[in-house]
Length: 120
Length: 113
Image (spheres, rainbow over the protein chains, first blue to last red):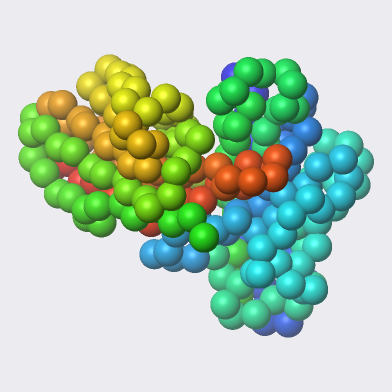
């Protein structure tokens, strides 16, 4: 069964360092998302990406964050200068194109196993 | 802002018991999804409910969507230790085509052998 894969599973970094979290979405999916989950808190939307551009971003997704689909298969989240409060699980998700499935299947997002980011 | 409130936050029961967890909102959702998340893993989709009043069964799990599509419940019959995990409900944000998901905080279920 196709799945979303994320690497690394755990990233430890020093405050102020840049990190890149990588995701390989399901191959025929066109919508991509990043969510994060701070320990003990709910899963929060960060950003959605479609047609090589950001389609929506949350207040959390400030200038320190960027996303990219560099080669047609990977989808990356970059944090330029990490802060202690960036420590969280980061989940990538993907969704098929809207017209390839009837509602509600087109709404279903498939999640990766996550990257645990620890900022020291 | 669409919010999803889940209750109870924590639930610890013995193997063989039945349980129900709830997901409530003041907003209408076009659909609601239930996920199970295990420690260190991403959310895994269990079911999507769409129609008001809909009931879906997945083995010992029964999901119900409220008539007004503002709430949902998950009932587990004869719980087993393998059911232990964080149960999350999530709904697509109304408006736009991004279908970004709003999540509840989840119910952490522990089934003791």
